[in-house]
Image (cartoon, rainbow, N blue to C red; front, side, top):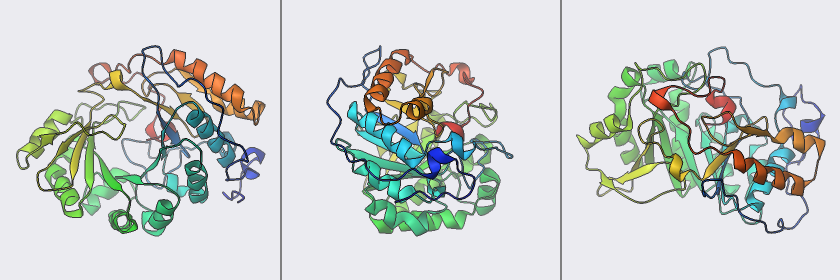
Length: 355
């Protein structure tokens, strides 16, 4: 299927095709292990830096996006994913920006899902376009989906997203439930006084829907980075929830950094992702690839590898690509060092990194 993303595309993306290449599984090689003995089994792949929202903790109100010729085309995204799966990655999450702004997303999901050796394909979305595409995403092989939701107040939603329609997101959540995903999780960023009064309401919403929810401390990145007036720690959030609900610690994991709790007599799990207050670097099992093809070895450090240049200078050379990824892992740092909440990488914003 030929990719159609509209006008302005240059040749690397214009002629690419979204389908598995006619090859067998990559030859076995050593798994990805960093200098600190951590095995890398999880790839977060950003498929676009574009989004139909302008969330205040993710991007500037007048955000400029990368030109399309600088972003990876579908065949390039597939080649990168195939290389990582061949090196032992078993879980791939597609992120953005907003993945659903790509008209070729379903074809890309299907192609990635077909890669030999991949155990799990998951997706993160803002939910704005999910009502129309949830069933197709499920049919393409996605079993779990994360949906961002920071407030249940329509006016506050417009303020936090700068232009979003809460009703569209709520309809997307219902569509995801109807589509029969194995698990649906809400991702919520609490920003102090902006939405801290809704913590219990958001938990009740998840309980009523029979879905999970994770609360994420604001990431200290980019020009929208750490603001002491809005920072709200996981401990504060957990204490607020525990004032009304019983939280039972669990050792369950989905392969990411969240720590989960159960609420009795409910299928809902409540998770906490705490880059500030509970550094999870010692258990890091993931790397990120941006929509522009930069392999980021740590969310809060500058070390990276330009995969786009390699893909375009040596097209089809999977062995070279895998070797470069192996060598890059030597640069993976021990931790992100978000010391005292201050950012270590001011130039990166979440929509450019991949949420």
